[in-house]
Length: 462
Image (cartoon, rainbow, N blue to C red; front, side):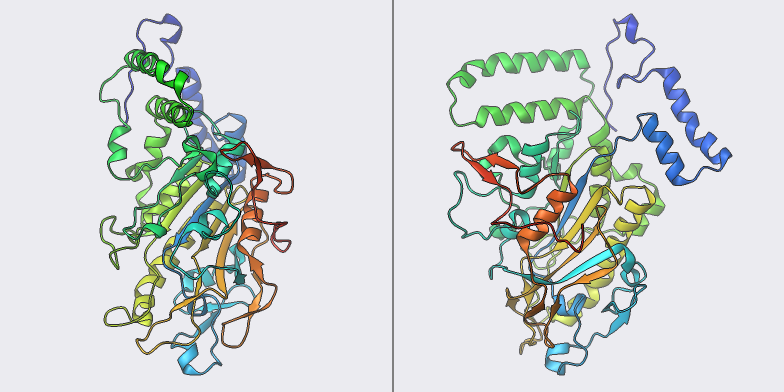
């Protein structure tokens, strides 16, 4: 638990907690829950009261979930039961609570909630190698001309355009685990510089989010000392590194002087019943060694971070590169991974709806490409950049629909092809950012548009 000692020498603060909330107001807020239950208030009414009391400040946000390695679209959301068995595989489609939409039988929980999801079956324009770059930026790694510093990931762009919701919550938080295969990792902030880097509270960084008895006064003294020591370097710096350090120092001060972010990452503060709904995983074990661990509770942490004020939270999840071979036969792996993912993603979407966050928080799930229609001799599917899929939820988007279609083997988009840039344009739109007019400056000071070409939000969704 993060504990901060408030100053003791200020009479004016003697009746306040360290976050500035007056004890009398705190008692009023604390009594709200009991009063609400006694009056039989509904969740929307309670949330409305909270908003008027300043307890819950709504903001638009995005949770981006990257399925490392390329998920098999034709085994998940675009099954072809009438194709030859060497294409179709053993899984059968099941109906959902939306007439006409069928998905894999290993996703029964999603099937019951398809009215809360939208599926893109015709995602085109993927690159063919294992590289997360396109999933985070909307651009291919080899796209030219690249801006000075390189293309920036979505979270860094949102951070630059909108800034933080409040000082103690970074606008862009990455829950992504480091992968030994470098291109699987989330790209650096590129043209926007280090000041727009993601805050990465994974591993040992969590231990740094504690003051260990240091008072606010002493913390302020140390901050002022750091500014004095760095002053001469800042005057001579032309790389932008010091600006980035300034940003990180400000974030660190905000984090250390507020319990919001630390609390958000502390899942022990969550209702155990909700934790169980998401499921648990192993933060250390890598399924195939070089991917991400299979950690469903990352989805829960993402929701908690959004509540704490993050605008963009990114997650990498498990390993989906199933070429086959001993121990890696694709259908064996699907039987392991699909039910765990089904439980976690439905828990997240249910949670957002239960908390009244579904209109403000967009969820995107995808990978770097699709998989080959033909099952190979090793009982696997190989890389297939010609068509892929994406799963979306929330954000005030129109749910309960399928966008696009593929041919009878699931190998080509035959209706309504959708590009990566269009998906990102949709996410920017959901955040209230107009991609047709908004630009950010690269490291050379040149303005750059946020998406490629003239990509627009997906009209079927917005």
